Each structure stands twice: as C-alpha cells, then as structure tokens.
Image (cartoon, rainbow, N blue to C red; front, side, top):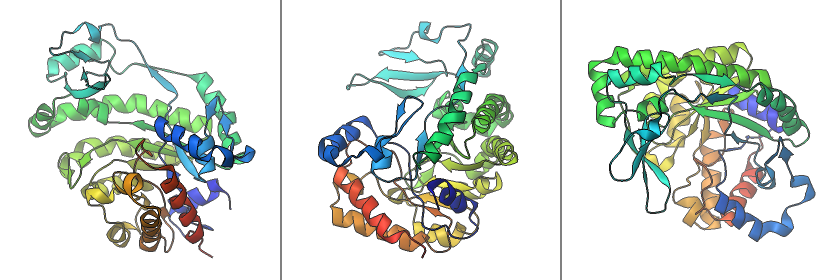
Length: 368
C-alpha cells in the first residue's frame, strides 16, 4: 500500500491500512538547515523531491507520508482603499484583512489586534473589495501534473491548507468579537456567508487540480480552553465548514480540520460539519489521545499528538521513542489514526529527535 492509499484508508476510518500513515505540517527554515548540517551525507538521491519548483526533499528523507502545501489557487484582490495609509500608534500598521500588526523586538511584524470593530468599517471595507479574489488557472493546471508526480514518482502526498474564518475573527479586537457574537450574531453570520464564496473557489481549484485530501484550518483554542463557546462555533463558524466539506465530498475529496489548543469541545460541531479528520491534538493543551480515541475514534480520524513544544525540542531520543510508542498504543487499533507532530517542526526541534521519532514509528506502525 502506498502513502496515498494508506492516508485515504485512515481518513475514511473504515478499517486498517497496511500501517499507520504519518503527516507533518511543515518544517521551519532553521530546522531544515540543522538537518542538512547533521545528515547531509545520509540524504540520498532517492530522497530528492522537486515538484512544481518546490523542494520537499526533507519530508521524504524523514519518511513522512504527507505534508501541508501552504498554497491556494486564488489571490485576494487589491482593495480600492489603502490599509497602509491608516495611522496606528506605536509603530503599528493595518494589513489588507484589517489586522493590526506591530514591529517586534525581532524586527518582524506580529499580529496585535483587529481594526474592523464596527459595522460601518466593515461595510466600507466590503464595498472596497474585501472579499474579492481572482483564480489562478495556471496554478491549477500546474498542480494537476505536480500532484500526480508527488504521489506517483515520489510516494508522498501534498495536502493543501488554508485558513477559513480566522482572518475574520482576527479583524476584530477580541473583546469586540465577543460583543458581536453576544449582541450581533447575525452580522457575524453575514461575514461567514461572505467569506464562504471565495473559500468555495479555493475548494473548487484544489479539486480541479486533483488533490484528494485538503485541510481547512482555523486556530480557535488555547491550552486548556477554547477561544469562544462551542454554541457560537456551531452557530456561526461550523456552517462555513459544512458548505466546504459538502462540496469537497461531492468531488470525492477528503478533508481534515486543524487548530492548535484544546479543541475537544468543538468536536461535535466539527464532526457534524463533515470533517473526516481532526489534526493537532496537542497533549500539552489537554488533548489526551487515549481518551479521544475512546470517545471519538469511531466518528472521526485522529491526527497528530506528538508534542512540539517541549518533547521534540528538549527531550532525549529515548523519551521521544517512548512517546511515539504511546501514541500508537493509544490510537492505532482499528485504524482511523494518522501519526505526526502537533505543529510545524520548529527551529528549536532537534533533528536527531525527529529521526528517532520516525525510526521508532516505522518499527511499530504496521498492522500486520
């Protein structure tokens, strides 16, 4: 069974593939550099994966079955107003989505809060083209070839990902977002409806390109708690996902959801909206994989649970191997589990720990 087949069997959650598949969101640049410095002599010709001008070699070297492709077949159009002309105190600026960013001590722009805190501002920005997009037909045709090359020639599965409602939520100050979902939920539903149209173009483009698994992502939880009540999630956000998932499923494409944090309170809404899998499952946020398998494993595929905040950066290879075995012991049985780190492999992660994780995983992942 190849990487594509085992990933699909696991997401369909109807029996066991030949072994547990694996997935990784991505790898940060310093980690990639550290990997090359440490393992340059071990990276062979068969590990080289160049597809559509992108280099996916290190995913193949570490023997991951699948990974995120942070690309979509649309571009957000330039608006008729200029967000950068808005004066924000203390070295702030507003981006095209109404997010206020400030220059950090590391000299990078960091999200601080939202700017669009009134219906009047939203109307002005919507009229200026906030939700207007263009579709990139060349991207779609390129990936029609590129996806087949990735899964056929290289045996690795790119999974495209984009955010959905998160940019809308972040366009509000969080206190104002809370005010709107308590006092003006219909306005938030209007925004959710408006953002669904361009997202459907994303879904259509991904499906036209031939991708068979896609991710809809929205960070909506902290460690130990969610950002807003599950009732709000189910009333305002989940209908966006249902529309997107219904379209993908009609095209024969499977979907999974991503958010960091303690997302279990959202599981009923995510499952009802049609997701085939739920990814991240941060153990340090309170996501206990054994419990999740027992409570939800017959309803949705589970993806992730290897800690990237402490274990993979600072643990020993023995600790990493033990945690790998525990993930498999907790969720492997019966299928419906995809192994992997909870987040991107960060710059603080040690290459030897990622190698130890994947070596141990492959020793114990088989269902035979």
